[in-house]
Image 1 (tube, rainbow, N blue to C red):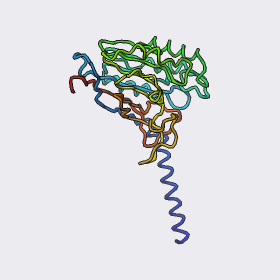
Image 2: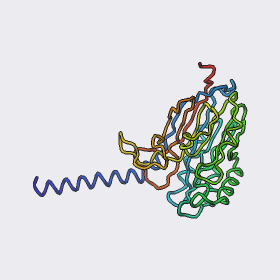
Image 3: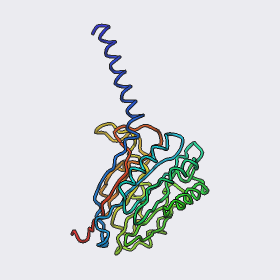
Image 4: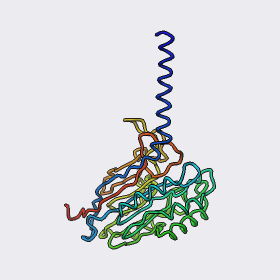
Length: 284
């Protein structure tokens, strides 16, 4: 290969790298995908058949990307007029930065509400630095409540026949799954919200059968084609994103996150999930 061809090859590779970097930085982080799935639930009341449940996770308001993207995403989501909306934690990013309460308040002014009910849980970032600040969790819970989002902290709430169980964050200061699961009634139509999917491997489920909706992983944010993401904040590396059959009657769904810890994504688009409720008992 002569010198000219070597230079042309280097220039070509540099151009491809620049394009890929620009895509991962400026395009994919804001290329929202609405994912649609059916959600069969045992004992679902007839009047909830066909209703929609929207999951929004990990919005991560902070200094690392423009929060107006979240507002625009909420405006798009509101056009779908979901019946239920659940938020599965990490409303802020607090690993190094101060909590951006002003920006969070602005974003929550546009938050998506369900026509029937709106419920949320907390994530690890909602407990502040090192996941150790009760005051941050309490402040965020208050802001959510003020904006019409019922916050569950190891609690459950029945909304027109759908029983939603919300676990507090696994890494936070208030993880007490027994407080919620000891009251689990298998004759109800149940779903569980748990920010961190690693909870699925703990012996806390009290023979629960049904869906567990989680976030936390962001799908790794960057994933080489046909390979697992190189970085995941979970112990069980099988817990990346999407629908996972846990067997024993439990189904895990991990949302890829609407926001980002860092403004970079590759092969892992941000996601809002829209489930259509089905009666699993009647289908069998």
